[in-house]
Length: 119
Image (cartoon, rainbow, N blue to C red; front, side, top):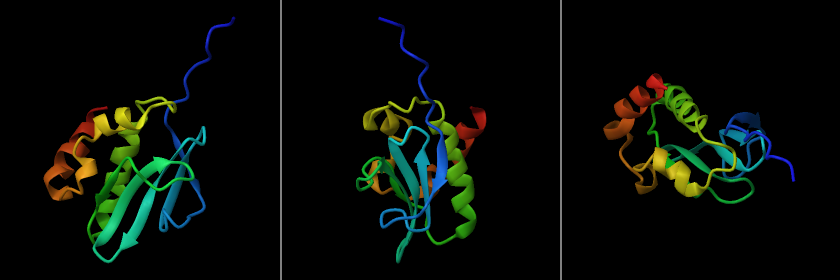
């Protein structure tokens, strides 16, 4: 029995939008996870879940300011890179313990951007 190969890092590539990720859809290189943006009346939501299933891991509102989408998405992607593709939802949630509660992002924005900048 050989040794296991290296774990794929959780890296995303752009994919065609779908019903769950209407504005932007990213698919992990191994095809396990989807991450993206969807506009709603209350604002744009950043969401994540297993590929081909409704988002069930990250789900938080970025509000109506389009200028915040890029910095937040980049911070989230940078944090996710530290995990392997095989990570569980629990492991991903541990990086964003506040994200499943539909939080007010303004409370968590500065710490999220600062944490990503340190990595």
